[in-house]
Amino acid sequence: MTEHQIQDEIRKAVSPYAVIFRVNVGSGKTVDGRFFKTGVPSGFSDLFGVRKSDGKAVFIEVKTPKGRPTDKQINFISRMKEHGAIAGICRSAEEAIKLILEV
Image 1 (cartoon, rainbow, N blue to C red):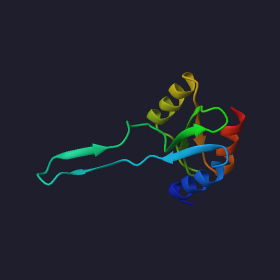
Image 2: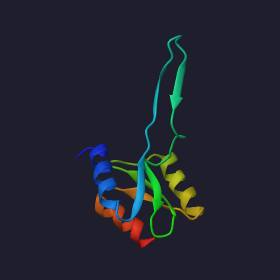
Image 3: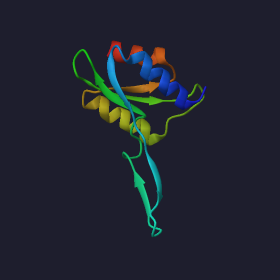
């Protein structure tokens, strides 16, 4: 299963508990050849939103079973937790539900 497929499964599975959005990023060139990047800072989690029960911020970094988070992703998750958000790395919908419900 791809990371994108896991993201879709997580979004569906957590919908009773949280409002979750997928982060889209990209890069390209303008017509006149200038390079640009769009989206959020490097390390920002793949999915983010709020827990319905209390409005707490939620950040989920999605990985395949063998995928490894980058140092920037680990740092981002740590910083969000320090500020009171729900944040973690999830490899399945079950892990994401557990993260949202247990914190």
